[in-house]
Image 1 (spheres, rainbow, N blue to C red):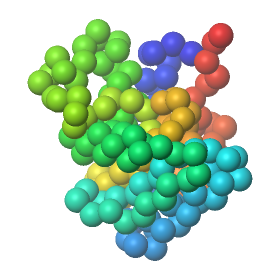
Image 2: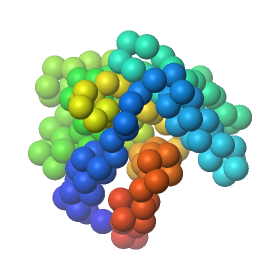
Image 3: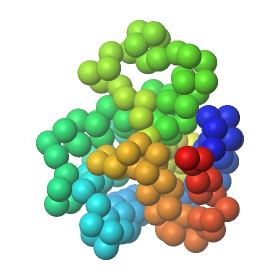
Amino acid sequence: MGVSEDLEQVALQERELRLPRLDAQMAWELGTLLRNMAEERELPVVIDVRRFGQPMFYAAMDGSTPDNPEWVRRKSNVVARFHRSSYGVGLSLKEKNDSLEGRGLPVADYAAHGGSFPLVVEGAGIVGSVTVSGLPQRADHELVVEALCMLLRREYEVLRLKPELQ
């Protein structure tokens, strides 16, 4: 898939994957679901679910590195700043031949790489993010989307990114 096709699909994901609420129980369910998926697949990831300014779930799987929490922080900052997925922001910048640095944002604090997704609550808007770090960025993004689809009982096959052309 090309950048524009991925951008269209990411926009659809962002519109469709909305939570009824974000409380401690919902954060636990989403985080635990991601952790179980990562454990079953032996994925070396860090998982973070947060309301902006409030960590609600965190797990570091075997094989994750000390760099992964820093990537989580930087990707989550992108969601908080732009109210879009970090992958969507990265694709938009790529399409415009732009960068976060070009917009005056320090790379020490922001990373427009896939893996952080906005948590939108019906009637309240974007209130937080769910972030995965440890895989290639497109795979980080898709793991989050797959978990949100499972949690919300949505069809992942309809919302997933199409396979990349080799």
